[in-house]
Every structure is written in C-alpha cells, then in structure tokens.
Image 1 (cartoon, rainbow, N blue to C red):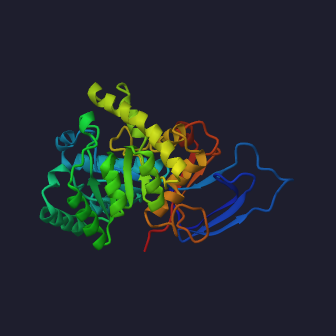
Image 2: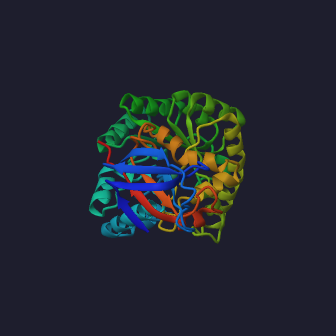
Length: 380
Ligand SMILES: [Zn+2]
C-alpha cells in the first residue's frame, strides 16, 4: 500500500466507484482534480485482466476519537505522554491507510495536537475537532457553560460536542434522561452558533432529539431510539444523523475486540437492535445520513470501512452507504463544494482500488483491494 500526497498524477481508463459502464481519464494538478472526462472506448485494446482500477472519493468519518487510546479513559492516564502521542500518530496512520482522508473528531483531540500529529509524523489526515466534550459535570448552569464554551472556542475547535444523554456506561432505564436542562441545552447551541461553531449532539434518543431539532444543531449522533415522528422532523429540518452503527455491534460481542463486561455488552446488544429500526425510520423519512464510526482504540482505528457493512445490513443501499461517507459527509462539514466527489476543481482526496468497491463482499475485502490513498491540496 502506497500513500501519496499528490500534486500531479493522472489515470487513464479508470472506473469511478458507483458509475457503471463508463471509464474516465482523470488528472490531478496542485492537489485538485484538474480534469475528469469520459474515456474514448478502446474496444480493440481491452486492458489485460487484473489491471483494472477504480477510484472513489476519500472516505469522511464524521465521528472518531483519535486522541483516545483505551476504551476506559482511566487506562490512558496510566500511559506516559510520549507513548500516548505515538499511539495517536498510529491512529492517524491506520485511519488514512484504510481510505479515510477526513475525520471529524468527536471529542478529545485539540486542534493543536491534530496539527502536530499531521505535520511531525507526516500523516496528513484532515481533522476537524471539537476539543473537550460538554457533559454531566458541566450541567451547572448557564454561567458555567459560557465559561466552558469560551475555553473551547479559544482552542480553535470548529465544533461543540454535547453529551446530551448517557451511553454504554448508563443503566438502561436512565440512558435517555437528559444530562442538561432544556435551558442549558438551548444556551449551548445558541452560544456556539453566535461564535460560528457547529454543534454535534450525542443522544441515544428521547427528548434531547427534539431539543436538537428545535435548536438547529448540525448533527445528531447515535440516535438508536429515534422515533418515526422524530425521523420525519430530522428530515424536514435537514439535521444530519450520524448513527455510528458498527461500534454497538462490536461492543455487543463479549468475545469481540473490545471484550467488554457482560453488563456493557448487553446494553450494546440492545442498542444495536434498536439501531436497525431507527435506520429504517430515517431512511424512509429521507434523513441526511452521515458516516461515523466512534472508533477510539488501536483495535478499531483502520477498520472504519466496517461501518459501511453495518449500514447496509440495516437497510441502506450500497450507494446510500457510500454517499453517507462522501457527498453527504462533505455537506455536513459544510465542504460540499470541494470535498466528497471525483469532480473537476474538487480537492483530490481519493482511494484507488483494484476491485470494484461496489461489488466487494465486505469491509475486509474492500480494505484489501486498496492500492493507494491520495491526499489532495491543503485547504487555504
Ligand atoms: Zn463518540
């Protein structure tokens, strides 16, 4: 696997993932697609078997935790800071190698750390950050929240992350209880938007999904207990839904890579079952789906494409799953005009495959068919 930071490159007679029966000639200049034109057919000169290539836009993972090294935060605190940094750099490398070229970090990573890792270790992953998450310890009124938000703004993060409900750590009967009051929640979103920050909300469901829609947040994360009615309102308001489905399936397997205690894996199993229903509601309502993994440990970084498999198992078409990771994800980041497509003028973030990515059986096969990952121009 070669990873190229591409200034100039060109491909002849290559297929674009998801477009059947056509080949393209593509050139990249200054890290952007300079031309994408349909190839003149070469019937008398077919390419030798095994030499066909496919190109897709680089995958955008809207929910990672690249700063975390352990499932339990207490375990990270036992590591020394250099070891943590090396592990974070490895997470960047593994994420890039699997074709994820842009990541939105959903908590834990400071913009300064992301810049340092990309530059010092030469892993040019594009990372949008949300710095520290706002959670239960911050439900101490609007004055406190204002200070906390101002501190996060100072880090340069582009996103504010609200932990609006519990998660795998919360008892089943309390997991949908709101962490903040409605007033606190509305204040966070308003103050963030006043400072041109976008907002992503961790919520498993319940009233905090209603609050998210009312307050106009940019994206709702997880949402496995989303109701059919809420799905309709998410669609209407064009609030993005980043369900992060695969992590709950992984966590539900007590013998899986996370090997969690039964009490946690049982909660994850219940979440996974609910997810398949929520995905159905959201798909039928026409909700804007975003691809996100919530991967946070060395055993998960680099396996991000598994999320495509789970989304498809829960009812999205292959094309819809890919859209969630490319065009939709770019829209959710506000970068629809320069990321997420193989199109002239777009930043040349791309994956080259030696097998049709729309025909591969699963994420393992997809990962093995990656020939190279291309990182295009840095944004101005
Ligand atoms: Zn998360």
